Amino acid sequence: MTDSTIDLDLHRGMAAQHATELRRLRSDVEANAKALQERQLELENRLLALPSQTWPEAAEKAHYLLSLFATSPAAQDPRRQRLIADVLEEFKRLSGGSDT
Image 1: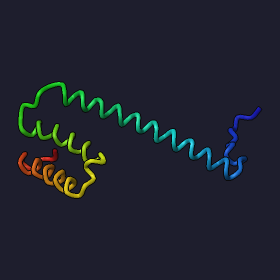
Image 2 (image 1 turned 120 degrees about the vertical axis):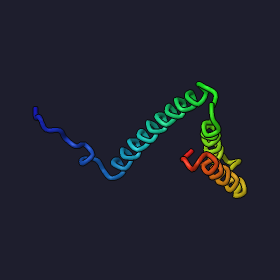
Image 3 (image 1 turned 60 degrees about the horizontal axis):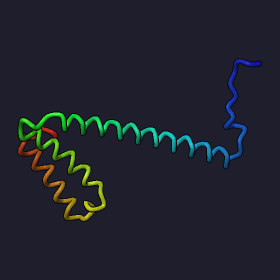
Image 4 (image 1 turned 60 degrees about the vertical axis):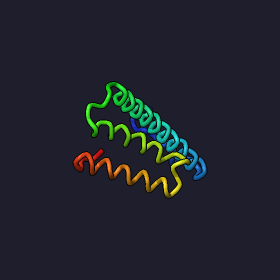
């Protein structure tokens, strides 16, 4: 028995190495997607926890929803993309220039 590890990837053919890399990458992507989904759920729970007390707080909620909508097929129209960008910029300007 030896204490050194053996890198099995070095003993596989190129096709097997490629397949292994794809499985690992897919696994990473799935884990990242799950983590993102959990963070989104946490954010949404916090946004729902209390009603907004100020316009900037309400704008922050609207910013989040517009950002979600912007990734949907319905928002891919160039006019809608411009409207979304304009509204987000207006939120920023009207809330005193802070990032919303």
